[in-house]
Image 1 (cartoon, rainbow, N blue to C red):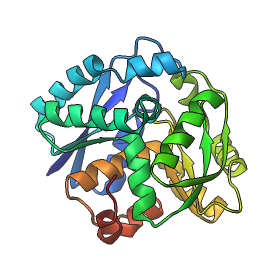
Image 2: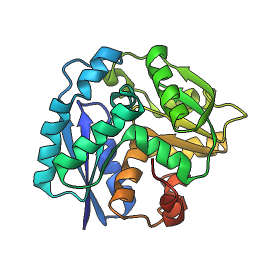
Image 3: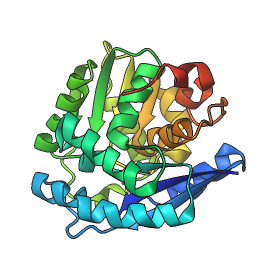
Length: 247
């Protein structure tokens, strides 16, 4: 049984993970460790603290004790705020502590975009604009063109976790752009497992959400790349796409 560990900050959409596990078909286990969130705020200084080495190190050691095959720092904003090199150092430190391959949600987005051969994206971000701009910059460093982006201005992860499916569908659709090949929806505080297929049907294109790409990334690092149904075009693409990804 393959097991993948996730370092998840605080509490907001952690119940997405058992839903994903069931939808994946029962041959993998997703282990969640909640990391310390001293302040729930989509604010640069607070996010730098959320992704600090002391916080992640403690959680990573717990995942090591569980013997996971791969690990993901499941926080988009708590990784991209460090910039490309800072986020790489962060992921490498988690890997060393866990004793297994590791990544983060920000790199998961990059790898998913590359895996699907996507060059132009739109972003529907829950964050305030100054935080959303950091994600645009991160994707730009990876060579991904952002043709449109919008921040929703939500300050706390707790509030994001309360968004209802109909609201998510309308908001993500509003963030689309005709020039985008896919819409990216960062923030692991957002529930998305139940709406992935509806999102892609509504927009008629690939939609990538934070918890979705985090789980895909963890499975990819663990060598689990069989195509899966019901979890969006990313999971349907399977091994050939996964082999094309590596940030």
